[in-house]
Image 1 (cartoon, rainbow, N blue to C red):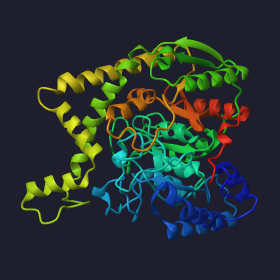
Image 2 (image 1 turned 30 degrees about the horizontal axis):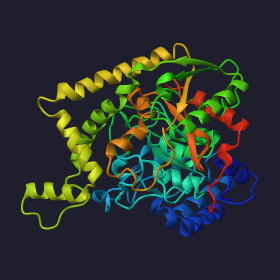
Image 3 (image 1 turned 120 degrees about the vertical axis):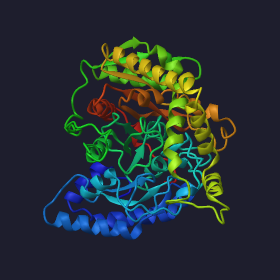
Image 4 (image 1 turned 180 degrees about the vertical axis):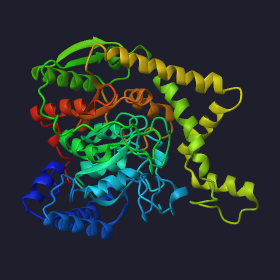
Length: 483
């Protein structure tokens, strides 16, 4: 049962091959047995999962047959979940049980999805390797000495190891797509505003977006269909109908125009990953696509712009964690100032402190115009580059990451080296466009991914291209040994 995709699970539940409760108990046993190797879960909600599975079976018994009814998933631990610890991978929220469900959690629960728990992540989603978590690093199931990517590393590792068929994640600068690439999964970051951020603990509010990680584009279409939609509780959520992502998967690719940015193939890209990307291009050409060389001239400024904007927003968002209203509080504070200082100093990890300091500096008097305002102007130029490119092509294709998964601890003393692993993903967040990563082969036994980008609200096109590619190849079917 653990080898089945979400779509296959839906068909099997419809056929009464097994019940949602049987499937849930099987996966809970796998998590108990195998997750100690991976550290992908922070909390396993066994009793709640079994109760939800029984409820799903009862709904099926009345003739209901939704695609997600009885489907087992798990949530990245920054989606607030009623009466369940929602830690954001941080000591400061280790004792926080959310008093409500995030919109994404509530929507999937209403559709009948069964949540098996909360998944490990980089602290407050700040990281590219899932090593900054208060609960310890997550291991990559393809090689337990390597990182799974971040910040949604727990989501990626759990799905790749077949502990669950799919999971929610969030993407601020590549945090769905990058771990998907490093663990042989499909992951999609929707258009900014496509998925509600209400109840999703914020890192950088103008960049964060929730989305699914799964083994196939079809499963991502299923889960995204359940997550997406307008939410009046989120002022950044766009009131636009949600496409039927499943219905569009089988559209032929004849006439599809693919853009290859020359900036993606410069220094810093592993030549073997470049070869894998070009092999994907050749396969898509066989399916009827045409290819055109394009340019994204302002991409070179993306990382400096991102690492001013994101920390600036983080320094503001994280000011609420002060030991007063909720979360960790230091012992025996001498006065209010001591309470603030020690609660935050003891509660936050090193990477979070680093970004808060960078952000506070960028927003400070005398530096706002020099850094933050300039970064926002670069952001607009990056968006303009994409809009010009999409006047010529339908999708943009390139590598998701410049390198395969690196060894645990290898880049911990060089934050900039780790930031550079996001070079191809952060532009989509700065522009707000949708992006998808899909499996594209292996380098030294480690998975690599190819990224697809499309205009606003064209998630269906990305899923269609990925699905057609997956019909013609079997990279996405490869599983890590031992799982």
